[in-house]
Image (cartoon, rainbow, N blue to C red; front, side, top):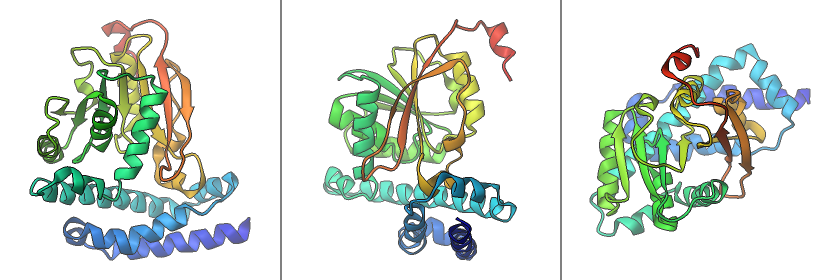
Length: 282
């Protein structure tokens, strides 16, 4: 185990050094090149099967703590930049749906939509809310196109919310999907909903779930995505997140390729909190 730990640690430190040489302009203007050169190396490393004790030891290593945080942050930035640039090209495409089907993450989100649809017991015409929908709300797009589910995307970055609206309009889904610029504090929304989906990049997780305790009524369902295997756990704080006791896990769907995320479903339990009681929650 020690030799594997040392080998992985050395590779992570090398990746961190390589990532630190990237400029903000490179990430913003050429995310495809950064993705191919650097993120592919990280994805290959993350796919290496390792025992849980190795992951825990890596997480506990003080030398790696800041490196992992930097890599995780840059991984999210590259993903967002890929989405942003893709939306900008999508709005000019002759056949936007054909272009969307070629997007690098599209197959993953099709599979995730099937997992969400099945795990939450959704039906055509149901309405879901997605927290942290980003510049390209692929989860909502796939749920709408493949399963006839309506959606509301909540995105706190005004630029990403505007891009998201452009993408939805370009794909002809403006009647099925609505985008709101805001954060978790806009909940609860008016109207029925069958599921609240918490995006992997929606942070801070503890604050979001504390507010969901306040905003949801007993019996309402949420879902969130985690990594359960291998080194991917290192780069996702949600993988070690503990649900508040007011939620009870009711289903867990583990991934099949090309998906790497497990989708966890939970129900709000107990009594609905009055404003006074809710305000006492930290």
